[in-house]
Image (tube, rainbow, N blue to C red):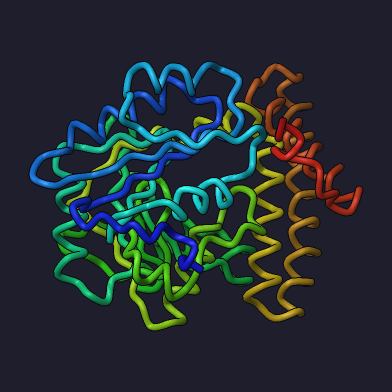
Amino acid sequence: MLSEITEKGNQAIDLSVIIVNWNTRELTLECIESVYANKKDFSLETIVVDNGSQDGSVEAIREAFPLVQILENRENAGFARAVNQGLKIVQAPFILLLNSDARLTPAAIKSFLDFMKVTSQAAVAGGNYLNEDSTPQNSFDNYPKLFSELLNKSLLRIVFPAKYPSKKQQYEKPLEVESVIGAAIVLRRSAIEEVGLLDEDYFFFLEETDWCLRMRKEGWKVFHLPEATIYHLQGQSKEKDPARAWIEYYRSLYLFFKKHRSPLSYITLRILRVLKLCLNWIFTLIALILTFGTSKGYRRKMRIYSYLLLWHLKLCPEGAGLKEFRT
């Protein structure tokens, strides 16, 4: 719980910003720059939690932004644990969690704060994410369920737009949602004090989904704010090794089902996910044969599917995935 958060509570600070960095020096520097470009009629503190980066991130941040507080981990502690380190020392009533690959537009923070101050039931509010070319990204999502995980989510969003809202729809007003994508989200400190910190069982992926579910179970609300625009350079960390990143996603998905779904749903998901992987592997193999192995895309997919299948055949060892690079 946030009883561990600092008691010095400087009320002059309106917003605490937490950024987790893992070998994304230039991205993190640009992210911090976008934070200070937002600073107008409010005060803020910025905390960077570095997960054992080896690319000179810490030194570069200290040189460029001497007022930023840096918490250094010797290894990659995972996203949830790193965020929790920052949460334990924040001083403001509102907390902005930023991925290092997020870029705030000039009015984003003001939009977040204005909304949270007048919406007392809001525990979490997520921004409106755009790609670099200003095309929309998915900024929110439904909770993982067996039905949605085994079918095509894009199809569900087309057939049932009210139940599965998406980037295909345009929103002008704040929208209450089940869960927000955690690239840039603002949280109410008092809600965290009631519900608790991020669940550190999650190493990477779905920790914010779990958090939103827990918040809503306690009566808080989660919102998407279309006016808080953020450019999200999606997946810069995970693209360094997509196969291992996918392992972390599968691990987090299974963990979410184990914690929040029935034992039958959990077992069914595990079995059917493997079958789906097998089918994907077979179809990709056929495509490779038909293209005489010349397609880089199919070769990439084959490597990823093979790695995932091998991980499942080994009964999903805990040390595989991005955890292999903790030090």
